Length: 156
Image (cartoon, rainbow, N blue to C red; front, side):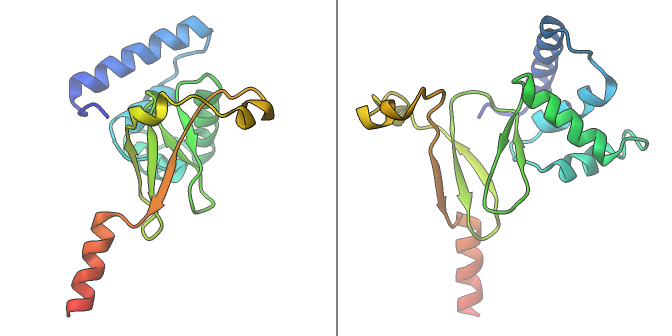
């Protein structure tokens, strides 16, 4: 994941506006703010998280608007929805080929890159199942912060 700087955010917003115009999608203030909040974090926030981040800037925005905005952005391929361990969808603005590590304790989702797996040839068995559009690895385990917290608790 590239370092999240103001320049990075501005570049992503400019590219977002270009994509919207190319696809005939209106660039609304709500869409811009939801997208800005999503690209401003390396996390994979839920719609509720984004709503809580956007609301101070836009007090009239509703949770329903955030959900509809995310659905539209996903439909247009500007963001991806990530399904993890809980029942709440999370959203990802990183559209580069990458994979996810999901902590089974705190539910945090971290991006990681694995070029070796990206270049693997699919086995014939997978090809026979249908047309594969994307290869995505998801690793599940306990993140280093949760492991450290567990160590501290067991020492005390």
